[in-house]
Image (cartoon, rainbow, N blue to C red; front, side, top):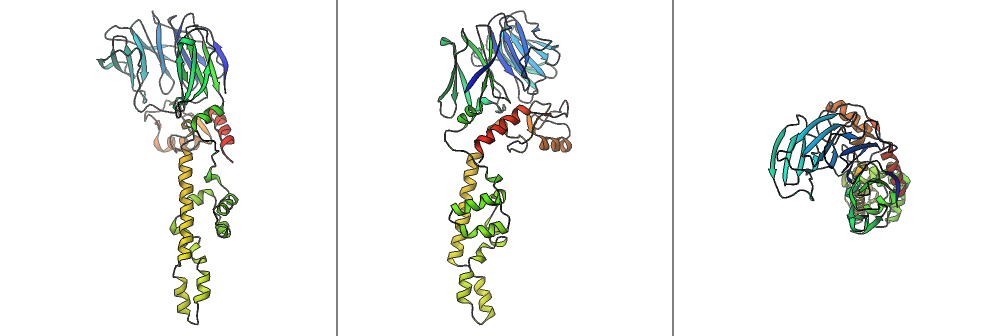
Length: 412
């Protein structure tokens, strides 16, 4: 389910573009302005609107850290803004003087690309604000700019919107199946832009009706878009010893319950079992030789000892069965783990986050992992390798709530 939670109606003309950072929403318009809003309550920031452009503003985008905003205009300029105070950092003029239609930061924040209506694409140094190089291509008016390696930590990798301006609607598709999930029809004129928030379940849509609508997706929609199967994932690594016992019984291995309990095998231990640990640590092979030992033991201690060291077809068969079942479980876990939304996974550990925090580079990490990273890797960003402006870590409560809700739906 998707619901409209807020409508912004501050622009005086068509809304051309919307962009999210981890804490802000930016919008730009034919009215020559750029506006900034807080995601906490959607109030406009004190230093908004941002005014410099002399003609329509076509595109705006945040740097990965969210500290800088870029906007480009028909006036042939691309402007960089400080999002904290609204001050102009740089004004970069397109060499050809053509109206600039699109702009985009590189994933490491070192470069900014701007594309103009005449097909020229310029690469700027985002630190010195100087021109790297520029080339003439076919028109970039409609195709935009995309960097390779751009982070996929957003809802766009699960489902995507399609702007159907003829009937003023936005259609949301599942990228896995191409099925239509939602059709949003609140705008009264043609829809011109849309953007997903990077760390929250929000979608912004702009229109020629001069408004920006903020839509909130519930977790069920996210889960629906992540999987086409109607099953709930069980996190095997979190299994208790009792859960492992239940699994053994279901696999026809009831006789091994006692041995597994004696060795305190939980879900994590189960997934790490090998042929060697089954024989050496759990002594599963030896326990399977008891019957052989009773039959073959004679008056000679040597005969008894040698018979205990000789594996039987039965023992090897049981060990193979255990290994096969564990391998099947590993395969299933690996397959299901791919269904975890990317934005719920820590970029450092590549595991589901339990205590997510936002670093000054704009990305979310597991708190303990990021603290360890800062203490061992100095003040660099794990994502961009640039020096972090600050080592302050802010709890990402919105993301934690989303993870907790997702876990409730998927974990038995």
